[in-house]
Length: 366
Image (cartoon, rainbow, N blue to C red; front, side, top):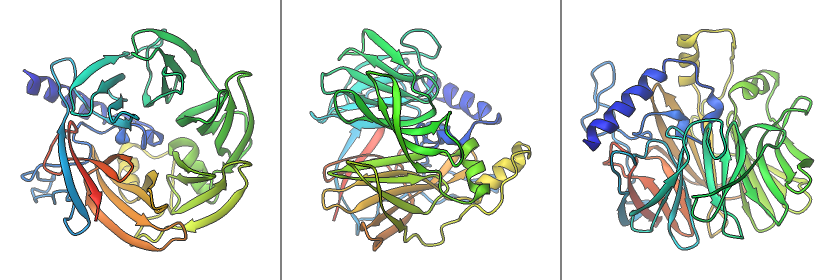
């Protein structure tokens, strides 16, 4: 029964994929793909009938630590999980496709889930991230509905706030009142900034930074289909934008720019054309020719992992770059499973042998 339910949901998502889904959902909901999350089984074939390569985690780079299988049932199926590892090792999962937030313990045992699709109190449009606030309550970043707060268990909805930033890509609490937010400020002039300080007490945005990088064509595409992501470590913020091949470093205290670090990726495909008037087929063809930055992570040794993707219809080909803060490459791996989260020295990937994203490979760098 579980497999039939999963297949039905996947088929609905493939049918929905024929409609025009904005690309700016890329980092939050795994590009709104079906539940394979960029992984294919060993026997998978593309439309030409040729066997597709299976995503791998090479033993020369990664040491396997453990495998985690998330508990599921007919009502609990992970389709596009965005994973946050909590302080106790348990997992908060925002599933944009399912419009649910789920909590699992460290062993993958299901604890609870809450939320549903809708526009009412406690309902979601497209939840992209869940995190726990210092007081224990839960904060959900919703791409289209703003910030939604719940009690520590998720059973009681507390409030919804909507900063003047739309869409919302990410948010991280910095102190009692202030949040670092990634998204497009609707009142800003072009090039619109991608990073903001939002004061929750006054419900204002006192400061914005990180203007959308690129020429006028790239900035136009970014307004319609862009995304941005950031990582904080100590007094430094590292930010990326979907269409750029650069890490932008900012001072974490005054948000002044510190450096622009070109990413040492091999054969990175940049955007050179963009026609917003094209139809779905033209859009898909244009999209398949690009590489898009998706996530950035600081590691304990202050090096950086950058995940990027090449969209392929209902699937993505994921790649992973390991670089120093000054742009020296350790590795640039193509066709990896999707990296879901980083916690200390542990990396959580969709398992390369799994067709569904509820089986994870936990590894560390050698």
